[in-house]
Length: 355
Image 1 (cartoon, rainbow, N blue to C red):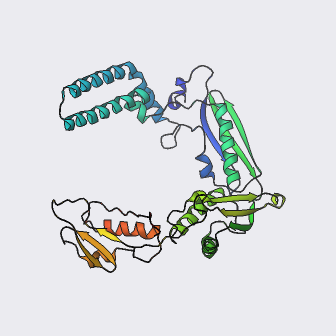
Image 2 (image 1 turned 120 degrees about the vertical axis):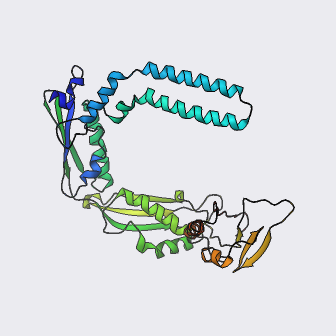
Image 3 (image 1 turned 180 degrees about the vertical axis):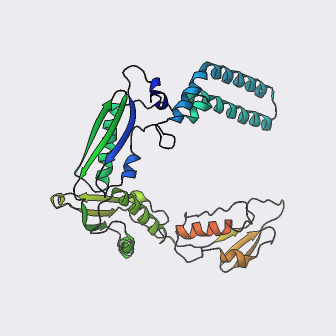
């Protein structure tokens, strides 16, 4: 067992974290909790008591000479520095610098992480009681964020010789539920829009409190307003306040606040005034100006008339008079890129005027 599990690599008074597990109610996501372990056990070969990666790591460690890689790195750096000093063309200098950095990155990896065998393998996991406390704290924070405000995480440590097994026993009561949702929005247009899209809200009365939903709801409101003309809106204007006065009943009240920008004093809707489509933005023709042609209210500018404007217009979801929409902007960019007719597609807005 000592050979298979690699415990011969332990130093005096060290113990090996052989196993760790979670005992939790069925409604708790144990997979999410396992991702929060502060210390992981060594991976086994086909669930057998054989740590193949530990064997690989120490096989590499026997042959590892850090000083050797440091010497090689210094030699490579000096070699490239000499060649760069002799080079006169900037293109050649750039090429040498790129190759030099690539070589140095390789040796830095060997110096910091060991040779390939050490990087493919893993050292024996030495049990650390301090990391057990950190893991328990992470579990408590996660359970709190999932609505289990009153939770208990009790680590139990069993030791047999050089082997340690840790079990985290979790107790939770009923989760806390959202009892009511209120809004504090001074801008009546913004308020009306948010209430109009309330059916898609991720924070609803009767749902379990989940911290993740508040982050997702902030992103949803931000995108929703940007799809309704609020070009310069930012998620930083959205705040959530949680009222815990109903905690005894396992209920919380939520206040959603949308603050006005300090500089302008209100949130402004932007409409598209005009659309200019440059089909050959990267091209230059000395002594010539781009031709301009208007098709379906869009100005097309080009040196050579080589694109079917009907096909281009079918992939354009931006038009004068429409409110700004971030989704339509991204859809237009994606559709034009899918044509494989352009090297790149950039969409830029000029909001220096009133539109």
